[in-house]
Image 1: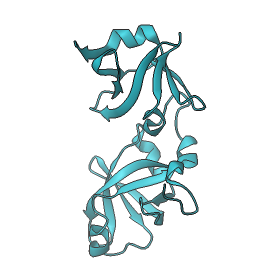
Image 2 (image 1 turned 90 degrees about the horizontal axis):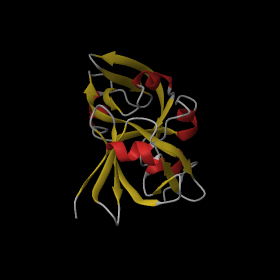
Image 3 (image 1 turned 30 degrees about the horizontal axis):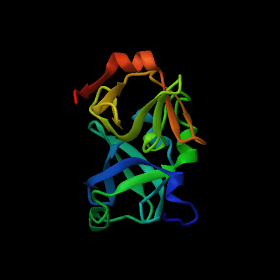
Length: 180
């Protein structure tokens, strides 16, 4: 685990740098936040190597966001950051998110179980295909098990037990799997 003045566990991926925007070191991004309009509220961003940047300016370019960060002032400097993920402190994002929302990082590798205690499997991936997040579960009972997280299925996360509690009825309405 990489630790600087913080650990990577303290960070949440919020965007990826797609390409330079202009010649003054600005960066065009793909933002990962559910509510993209929260992105301009983030004032400090990090790279996976621990480098920290103060956000000087956030602006829209078409349907995308672009930023100007301190320490990057030329096209060449911006181009070196292409395809790198940007992270924000979990504590900064916690202030912005809806209390009923969950971070993907908090779901991964957790045991999924119904509220009655029945184990479903282990959450091994979460993908977004536009309409909702698709949660993939490795299960001993079902092959290629997944569900669309359309709301109300994930009841909570028990961090001590490393479990995600699911509403069984809602889950069974939307889950898909291959017959074994």
